[in-house]
Image (cartoon, rainbow, N blue to C red):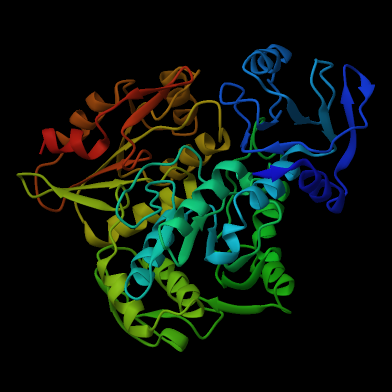
Length: 481
């Protein structure tokens, strides 16, 4: 239960309160009102709900329908001139986040919070941290691939970072489930649309940065993308930063006065003796490590997670055990065909992550390489050129372009855009299963390889705004082994 006086005090302290209006007139009486629910879904309201109007596509009729269900108060950036009072604010997302914190009893104060940001590697690093902290603590995890609030039940999140009301409700569930730590992936979008406004993390980790999520409905420029990613550093008590990332100098200067650890070649915390399933580390994590995830970049993600967890109470023994136990669905999963050829399934969905994936595969496989790849529709349009230019530099790869969440676009039109940067012939097959089947038919010996990139463990295709059932890359590949 939350009193309206508390709501107004929170807004005023944040300099976010403007006035209370009803039917276009100033409304002066706001005492004796309490709320037992907060919501941004007009279909989920009752007489004691405080409702938040958000989104560019919100329509007045949604509010009128909620009023018919008993709604008596709402918060918005404008007065919709309906029959109930409106608390008018300057920024609805800020209001949602701070009020949700209070409504759910400030669960963030009862958990140790670890956040990862970066263009790639967030999920893998989060899994490493989860397995490390699991050795001696009781972590919860909010991940793109799998979220768990009790350490037993796992489910897929719709957003990399949930909407603030959902986020704090999930945190409260984690506290109720006796969790001690919470590991999160924090996207640039989370800061752009203020899903984590007012939240301070115990440790924030910056893995890397490369152009991505730049487009009409995301970030307008790389500068905007990078700026919003850096906000995690500003909102963390301690930070861990990859010294080999692009624009590291900017980060190093920004975090100089904070508690921090750097890893990579410009630091004392370095990966050495890197092999397929083992590596050594110098510095704070000095020792030998075993891992199930191949690739030096995964080993560096393990170091990032280890340094963060060391600050959160993990021992070196916990870190070694956790790294050795970590597997990630859709991240460098390896299958073997009857002819011995390897099939790699990975979530690599932008130019930089695909480049690193190809580098890892070429280190271990010396035969032919066939690649199944698509690019998402209506988002991340810059990836298409990145893919095309990268594949133009790898003439030895046989390319099969196909659907990967085409949404409202034609997957063959997306494939055509990618192939416009490639001067050799490539296969364009809209049906992803057919593309995988044909790619797997190109192998003949153990040294050969098929890479299925982009969807990872996703068991759906987004078509015309709807998630359609899809067996998943691994399940399809298994049919044709």
